Length: 160
Image (tube, rainbow, N blue to C red; front, side, top):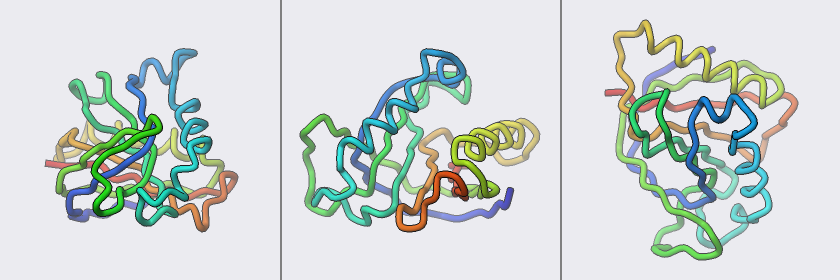
């Protein structure tokens, strides 16, 4: 898995959201698969409320504590300027300006490479001198070139 450090400005996102835990996602109570279905059914990528509709964010935010606590996942896009309110069941999220350690998955089926990458990320931060900020982490997908059977995804982890 390739890694780099970057600074990013604050991001305002709009999309569909659910609250969950990693423990729930490992079992039958997981909500993320349905959340992805809700995202694709929403048609938000073509909405005038988003900018860069081809860039899909899977944001992990509102952490209760750390990787073992509850968090909110929002799947969506950058909110277009001047789009203050939402309707149609969409949610807003603000990601603060932050420094990120960026991990790039290897290529393969998206459900496999993303799950494997998160396992490696959790292991990495158990040993690393860098500390996670838990302010907003996200997976970034480019819809223009996305192939679910041969995906390569960037995962941004906010650090202190």
